Length: 130
Length: 89
Length: 95
Image (cartoon, rainbow over all chains, first blue to last red; front, side, top):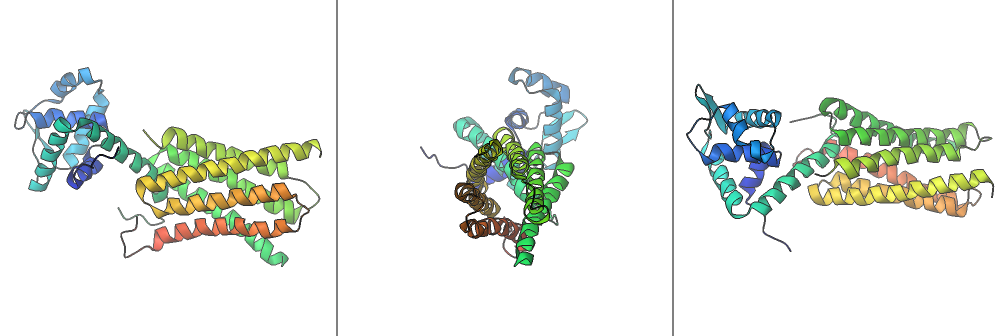
């Protein structure tokens, strides 16, 4: 049963910013309430029911910050894409989360696996060019 | 002819040692567990190749087959363990 | 057949199977990542497995085992080739 893949933008977004299902949950927490700053403590509390642990929340937030998806304000963390491309990709990701959750979860796992396996092949590159 | 055979045995040994070194380097950098098991695999294969060279070229009187196979098997067991547990989610 | 022969043969059989299973995993990894390095490693380990099977089956005294070692050399050359290609694949996006 071959289902169509998610759009390339979403896959690229997952590759760069969503290393796990836990990270996806953290991102969704922010995106669902755009413009409303949440403190780290609030996010941890909101995610308690999904079994996402505090260290993972912090790691995910740190990655999202470096990817230009959120920014920190005195009131807390807020979803703030730093480019229209990022905004568009997040929009498609949110749509996938709502309409094709199984495919999305499968894709997140598949990309995480591919990264793990790619590490073996990348070890043989003598000069790394990131 | 003997020189060629020796060269070929050394080629295999050098290849395995190179793989070991490259995988070890990346493991130390990223601590990815798959790379740990892969490194151990090529350690085993390197030992296997070194023993093969020793067995056939250096000490023709001795029979190192059991040791050679044991080294290769230990290495491959590590690789398969890594593939089964660390290569997928 | 001495006891040592038996143990050596048993272990060699296990190694050959391990080479084959690794080869299949490498093939799977190639499908997941499209990285040709895995394809080379997969072929290399099949060659190693084949060589080992031939050498053990024919026995050390058979003159054909000498030819079988060509497979082994090819296997390691394939691995070297894969590593080389990974590092000199300049213009195309090296993946």
